[in-house]
Image (cartoon, rainbow, N blue to C red; front, side):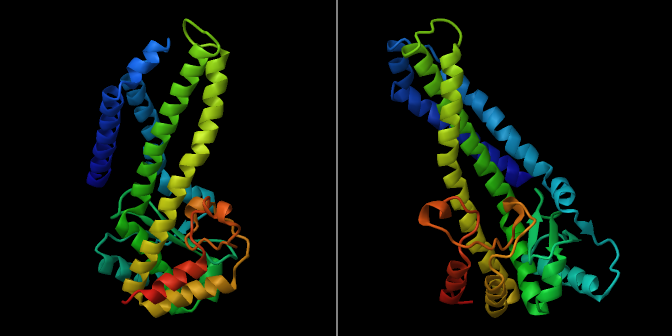
Length: 295
């Protein structure tokens, strides 16, 4: 909770600085001189509240939604040796990472995958697919769990959700500034908002949203490298590389998980433009990064 509060305060400070900067640059006066009556400070605060609200609510509901979306069954009492091993392994990794014991679950999927979610690093959720448990060696599966524990320990879910909130804020803000300006200057609307405002704002939100998503995806790819490094530290670099190599061998296999929950995101690469819109770096880059590091 403290991490969320500090991040919200940081984001609020960003909004305040942005408001002051726009005022110092005379942006609002420039708009007024061209017949555009718009209170930028009030608009910025409005966009901040609504932009952050969706991200924070999604973060707080992430565990429940993940369980529902994947059909994850929480292991309350181990029923077999695999479940007992999984519980003990996650407990050991969580202790080594300095976080509380997360809930541990299994979901039905032939794809080799896993995910971690939750707003509280001491009460998170770590889940693994049946396909991964059946095909990976114990060392490789342990490395996968270490990667997921790394996400939790690094606070990645919180950080990415709140980055998304900041991005939402500025997409809403600038799209409305553009829409309001076009409505006043081009469509000559004098009072309220005409159809030009709504059409322009809608188009601007789409364009700015696509551009802004590239920022979010970039942060997402960087957190995968950090989680790999955490996995190598907790489970050993050899095991972490082995798990990624195993995933590379299965590259192209279908996954039932949405991108936001894909742990080891098996990606086929694609052209450079499409790679800007992926949540995970190519497996080759992740393997090379681990080989280049010293643990």
